[in-house]
Amino acid sequence: MEILRIVLTVIYVIDCVALTVVVLMQEGKQQGLGAIAGIADTYWGKNKGRSAEGALIRATKIMAVLFIILSMVLNMNF
Image 1 (cartoon, rainbow, N blue to C red):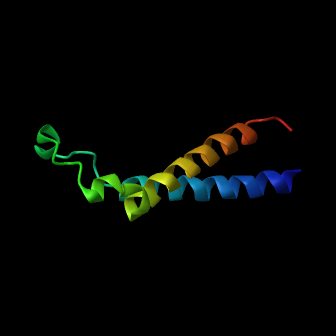
Image 2 (cartoon, rainbow, N blue to C red; image 1 turned 30 degrees about the vertical axis):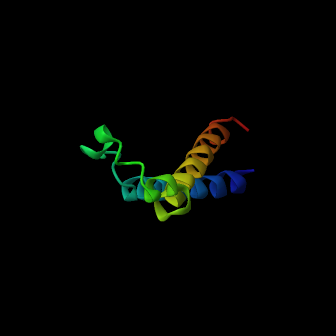
């Protein structure tokens, strides 16, 4: 049982570091004055899910869920 805890802890640390890196790689949500005039709805803005930024957002969500699940599992007393 102790080996499982060590493996999960290593995965947890890797997930923490990767989550930090992915969050820091994301662009800011500031759109400047273009958001006021509605200029921000461009082709690039509408298809953001297929871009690298969309992949970063998706990876952030997956790693955040993994972080929460591993946090709960590692705090169980087994």
